Length: 328
Image 1: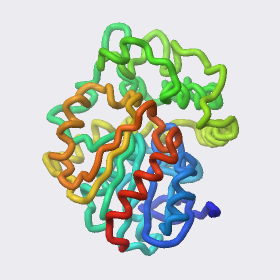
Image 2: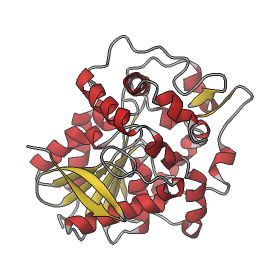
Image 3: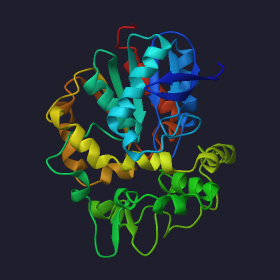
Image 4: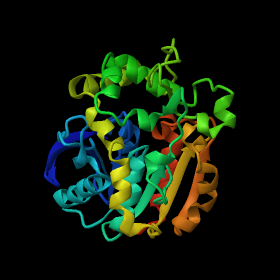
């Protein structure tokens, strides 16, 4: 089943999309630092099962436009891009799936526009409701280290580090976030230690370049990602993080709102996201926030890159969930 590419106009930007198949629409939203390519296995599997699978490069990524202004990367912009994508494709509704940063986009698309997004699939990141305080004020930091999302806030700092050698960055991030990476003891016992960046170092510091890639990741995969970020830089993706507090302000009117469409959540038991502060309380309560959550699937031995590390398991889960929906 061939994956094809084209450009569409949505929400004031030109967006690159990869797509395959015909049938009910399934939109696939990627995370950081990735692109449409992270869904390469799902595009084919969904198409073969009779769906029209579409994976866009998100705003600021790949061949999609990259607005200069940081404020143009809010959740409302990102959800608006997905609504515009449906309009450009002539689709009344779609199922939306998201991984990593794409998961909040997918969850909020379902929250804000259930008339357009009839079901949602979240990978790695569950629906996270709006909290009582500005998010960055609650992120852990010490005299020696800060949470990685705080490190990403200052424009230019993370860019300088990540863009020094895009290939090394991609190898490092994908390996050390995977289920194949060794885990230090404190990562299993102290949620406050997970995702911390040393103030004297950087996001990539403290871990060696992997001697070999895990079986699910090839040198060709690394080369594709590295070539994209060598051309575009990392600023677009980092700007999503720089709107975390702004998103909190914009979502005030929806505090307490629930995701009302059918939903599926899939994550790996070695995903560091599951060790983030508050996750031990959030996951058991997820059905209260997403009343039509049909299933939570935790994949043993799987790390953060869910659909790339375990494409067969994720494809089976997605197709099983889609099979419960009316094909409209």
